Length: 269
Picture 1 (spheres, rainbow, N blue to C red):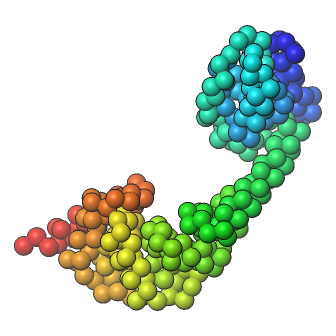
Picture 2: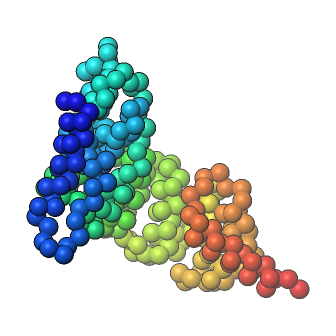
Picture 3: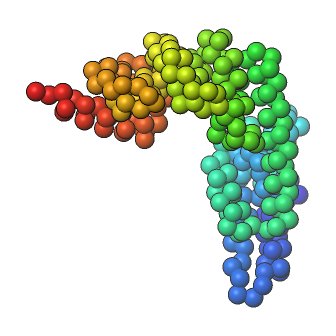
């Protein structure tokens, strides 16, 4: 297939939708043709940019590179090409265009089916690793259940045992998560003693998130704890400073700074 044939096919896949568009409705943008993989003529699940400057689905272009390793040429231009691939920052753009209804229905249907299948395979692989004793996988399974990500249904009760197993194996982030669950009664009956115990353990092991959770609780007197401004200041400073495991997001950092500033202002004679 020549360069012009490939480009025509990609544009044609987009233009199919125009024929179905009712009068007065928004038509499919022609620029969407650049998102269609020239090899599969489908929307890519894992878009990458090859050294010819074109976007491909990773699986398709990697198969092309492997098949033609002795004399690699671009599927689009037929000119010689290096095998390097660069992740393309188009997946979120594609998803946004799908949500807006800007892409052909037939391409979107195939893309969604492939995404569902790929997501299921990733779920099964992650669960198997976790069940085989991989503590990092245990933590990620717990996080996915907690947040309802990557195809996992949101269920803190299902998340809890994975955090617990990983914490028992010494994974610090899971120890912090376990403390948070006990402290707040998430997915398990609330137990302040165990919440403080596991959050303190994670804090001593370097978790800024655990230090922040404890510091915030003592600053506000939440979760049944008494206000302890001195301890809160110590923990919040630790969360923003010396902790080796940095997991706080910007919102949490801003909250920690705000609490710390207020506490320090109140403690000034």
